[in-house]
Image (tube, rainbow, N blue to C red; front, side, top):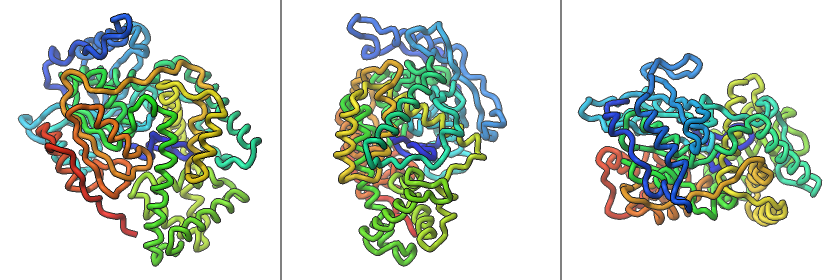
Length: 532
C-alpha cells in the first residue's frame, strides 16, 4: 500500500500525496560522516560519491526560474533542477536531473532560518506542491513559512525526475480488475502471473534505473539538493514513507541534520522493511475500517446505512458481492471499490465524502459510485502520474530489501491474515507480489540508528494510523537518541502535522522555529472528529 494512491494500487504506505540561497557555499558541503564511510573494506564508494556530487552541486547551485507552464505551479513559486549521479558508486558516470521548486520565506530577512525540504511519502509521491501551502495561505504552516523557504522535489524516478514506467498508463488504470480475494487456486495463479508480468514490464521499460531506486540513494539525493540550495544542514519534513527517507538520511548523515520532523512513521526495523510492514498494514487497516464504520453507524440519521457497525459491514458485503457478480457501470468491481473505500481508513477527511457516496448508492444512485470509483480514461495525464507513482513504489520497495521468493510464504501469510482482516489483505499482497520475482538487485536495509551530531528529531504519530501503525513510531523513537514522540491519542488519520490540532501544531512550530522539544514525550487529545 502506498500514499498518494492512484486508482488501483496504494502503502507504505498511505493514500495522500502532496508535495534559497543565502548560506555561504563554502559551508554547504560537509565531509561524509563516520557511519557513511565504513563498510567491511573500510571504504564506501557511495559515501565518496555523494560527497563529490554535493560539492559539485554546491558550486553549481540551482538556476531558479519561473516554473514551466505544464508544471501548474504559479509565481512566485520558482522551479529548477539538480543533477545527481544515477549510481553514487560512479559519481562521474550517468547523471539524472531532479525537479525542485521553492518559495521564499514570508517573514523578514532576519527571520529566515534556511530551506525546509519536504517529502509526502509513497514511495512515489511528488513533493512539488509543498510551496503551494504558502501561496494558499495554509494557516497551519504560516509561522514556519515566515522562517523557512518551502522547498519541494520529485524524488528520483518520480514525475519530472527521470520518471519510471512499468506498463502503458491506460492499461494500468483499465477496469474492472480481478477481485483481489481469490476464490480458487486458479485465481491465485492468474494474479501471480500478473505480478510476474508487471515485474518484467518494469525491467523492460525502466531496467537501467531499477538497481539504483533505493531509499539510501534518495537520501543521498536529498543531501545533494541540500548542498545545491547552499544549506550547511538540512531541515526536513517527511510524512509516511518520507519518515523512512528521513530516518535513513539521519543514519547516513547525522551531522548534516538541523531540524527533522517525521509524521506517521514507517517502522524502520530491518525485519519490517518491507514485507512484514505490509502485513502489519493489513491488521491496522481492518481496525481503522471498523472505526469508520462505527462513525457511519453513529450518523445513521444522515447516511441511512445502519446504526451498528455490523449493519454497515453487511451493506459493504452486499455492495461487494453485487459488484463482483456484475461490475457497476461495467467498470467498478471489488478491486475498484477497495481502491475507493480505502481512503476512509487512510484519512478522516475522507470519512464524510466516502459515506455520502455509499449512502447515495444505497438510495439507488449507482452512478455516483461509478463516477467516484471508476478510472477516467480521458485523463491521460492523471493516469500517467498514477502509473508512474505505482512504478516507483514498487521499484523502491523491491530494491530496498530482500523479499520472500517462495509463493508458499505469501500464500500462508495472506490466507492467515485474511481470516480476521479481510478488507485489505489480498489486495495488498497482489500489489507487492512483483517483488517476489524482481529482476534487479535487492539490497539489505539500512540499520537505522543515531550517529554523532544528530540533534533531537520530532516524531508525530496518531495512535490508530492504518498505513503506518503506531509501533513504527515507537521503534524509531527508540532508535534515535534524544528524539521526542508526540502521540495523537484515539485518532487514526494518516498525516497528523497538516491537521488542525493546537497541541500538535504548536509543538511542531516551536521545534522548527527554536529547535526546542518537550522534556518528555507528549500525548495530545485527538483533532476534531469529522462532521457528517
